[in-house]
Length: 166
Image 1 (cartoon, one colour):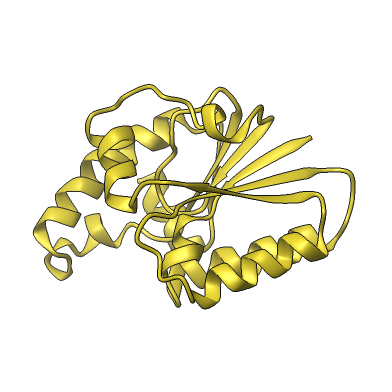
Image 2 (cartoon, rainbow, N blue to C red):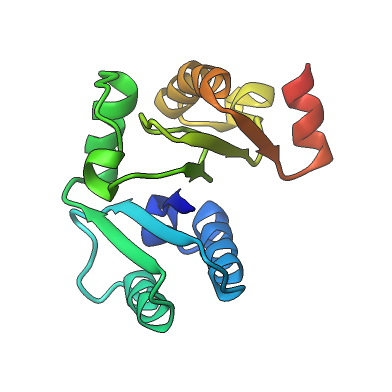
């Protein structure tokens, strides 16, 4: 099975979803098995000495069934293309065939694969006053649409599950 994972948060963020994604990927690929992994991420503008990319390179060297797929765009450009403009350019154009795609950061890119979406919280809806208004509006518009597209949703807490059910 070929599994694609959106690694953008892991490539750019030291804490939060980035840290969660790096830990998840290390745990899953370290189990071995016969699956292939394609870790795709927005790469334009990343510092050349990024410790997260150095870790990714080491991971790919240690595990030949893991391949990094840098996308030569910024995270903002990818968001515009896939979420705001809704251009239906499937990620498979860059990764090759995928059987499953895991999106650990609230939104799914266009894909032909089965999908797993992780939702960490709905604080942008529950406490919108704590968010920058543009980000809050974006998430409030895009996340419900993404939830409808997802084949499976993973809520990583009971509180998030309860918020999703409401």
